[in-house]
Length: 170
Image 1 (cartoon, rainbow, N blue to C red):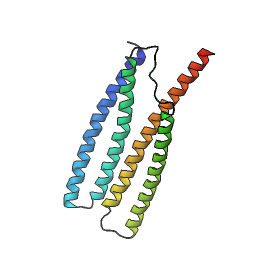
Image 2: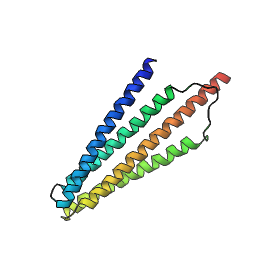
Image 3: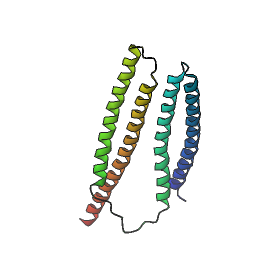
Image 4: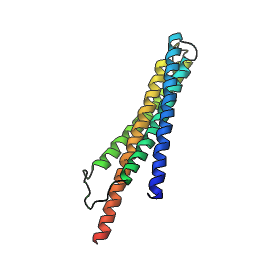
């Protein structure tokens, strides 16, 4: 087993352990938020922020987890002379779409954050719906960013393979 494969395996196991711990923290935060919602104490809005913060970290580490395990499984794959071909333009189109979605959700997050500020100035009694809308926008922007990054990696790999193919045939 090569050193690279060992390090990829260690990374995959480490991210799996980290993901498990983070999911446990997310479950605890959700339980705490639900408890605060029942009593509707002054800590309810803060507990909503905590849940969305935990959710963002879980999503980010899930992307790392998937990347590590895919890299590990790919390291065991036998090299074949034939490559499977995905649509030529698909990675580029996906990258463009997910990049636009990321930008849209980031802008929408900024708008939602402004709504929270205006609601605080107006002394709105319940900020929970505003905080939930802001948290949802953050979660969707992170998900679309990770999808854009994955499609960019696929696009760069395709371009690298195309350049390698052109240089060997020339």
